[in-house]
Image (cartoon, rainbow, N blue to C red):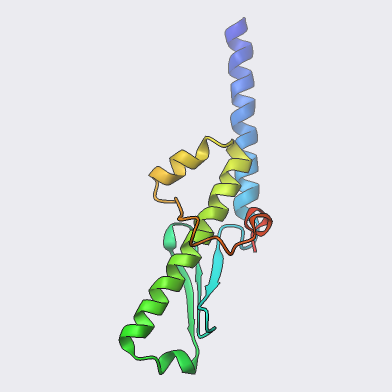
Length: 128
C-alpha cells in the first residue's frame, strides 16, 4: 500500500515539474539573451547552448576590418550565450530544483559568470 502512495506522489511531482518547466520555456524570450559590444556597433541575440538568433552590425562595425570585427562578434556572441545559459539554469532550477544546474553543465548549458556579470540577477531569473 505504501508503494502505491509513493508512486502516486512521485507521479504527481513529475507532472508538476513538467508543468513548471513548460511554463518557464513558454515565456517569450525566457531562454534567450542579447548582448551588445562596448561601442554599441555589434548586437547578438542567442539562445541556450549558444544558438545564434540574430547578429546586427552597424555601418561603423563594418569599418573595423575583418579580423577585429570577427573578434568582436565572437566576444559578443559568447556573452549573449552565457546570459542565455544563465537564464536557462534559473528557469530549470525554478522548475525542477537546484540539482538541475549540474545536469545542465554536463549538457553544455553552463556559463562563465564573468560573461554574464552585467546581467542583473533578477532580470536573468525573469528573462528579458
